[in-house]
Length: 346
Image 1: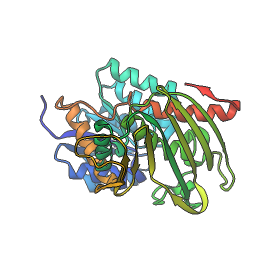
Image 2: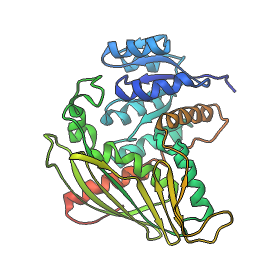
Image 3: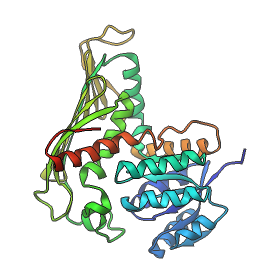
Image 4: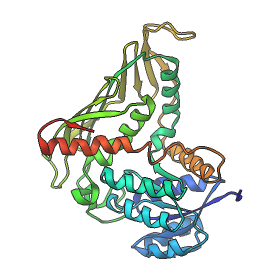
């Protein structure tokens, strides 16, 4: 087995690479950045200065030709993820991609297949699955607090600034890809709710069967939705409800809530739950608080470390391409449902 650290290349050195991926790698003794690549060379130089990367380039081919590089982290606009991931896998590089895995399910499945065929690790940056909040909720679900899962609600009303659509939250890169349907794959459903759906599906073991959606663009000069309502039906009968907006004056957030025949879990800070189940060491019919928080930054660190150890064969990979696919199935299905004006089977 090769020694640590695992050697990563950053492909795409924009907002998320700067604020989330690089800080996580710098904290980890099992991961190192040896190459930075961006079509804007100044961004690659900036992150090379932070990480000490040897290779600084604006060409993907340079990364793929570098024998030092074991893993390619893809943090580029959504529409590039699959082609860049396939190119990396064809050259024997492991792939860790920012969410979403792809802008559509067939492309995602293509990337999954080539990584499986070549025995490469394919991970997705869904840090919500690696946080203390997720671990506490998973423990409660395993202990039977919910009983049989009956559904969930996911509700966010944001007021994203107009500058978001041309530069993200940081303004690090001036670009309009988020506002274009072909480049982004969609609006808040794709950009934000992919995180929540991934967390809820994997926490509860949910397999989506059908989806019905309505959405529109009311308050933003973009091609993607800024308001939506989605209902998802799952194997076993559970019903998920997604409601949200990226352009609501005032903005208001609500924690994700999970419901079952015996209890309710609120994914808040602190986590709260209520159960009618008679369980050892669990107080019945009273709201209980569990001191834990989202800590998404720590989720990125835990995800990078799990990924590196999976590459070395020490651990199984937790956030796999296959396990990340169901969130994309729901989102793509929601967009098709609106187009067809009817529920869509998945």
